[in-house]
Length: 184
Image 1 (cartoon, helix red, strand yellow):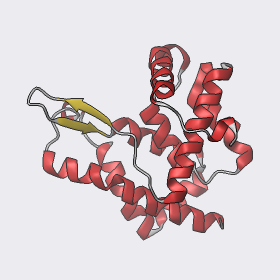
Image 2: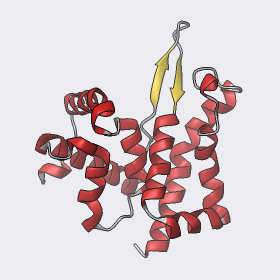
Image 3: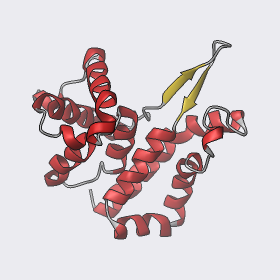
Image 4: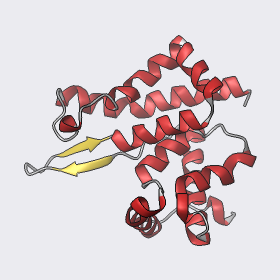
């Protein structure tokens, strides 16, 4: 097993998330939830693009060999999950006073759309023009329509939770659609 394909430990993920969050403002890097969405949208990219994807996620931290390795492993694990159909989006959870948690999909969705844009205008336009693909994309886009005041108090919490719970299925359908278009 190559170093890039080794599963990340919880300690690896904590280290990676902490370094990214601590450096976001100064380096333009993405936190893990945004990076997860970005890598999901770009999963069908050619292998030669992978270093550029990692650099895009790391921003000014791209020269850090340890972080490059961890982000490469993070991406490889995501690709393995997609291939196995065992994918779940990395969604932050906000603990609440009543003991419940509120899923916060905004960063992941922002990252996914950044990945769609990264894939290029022709790819984006094809995605939006296809009725089936657009139907799977719409729920992801719905979270980006929230007003900032609604992030922690969604207008319809039941629908919010249900839609978050369906993201994985929509993403798998979009991934299959992209693979078919890419001939993979």
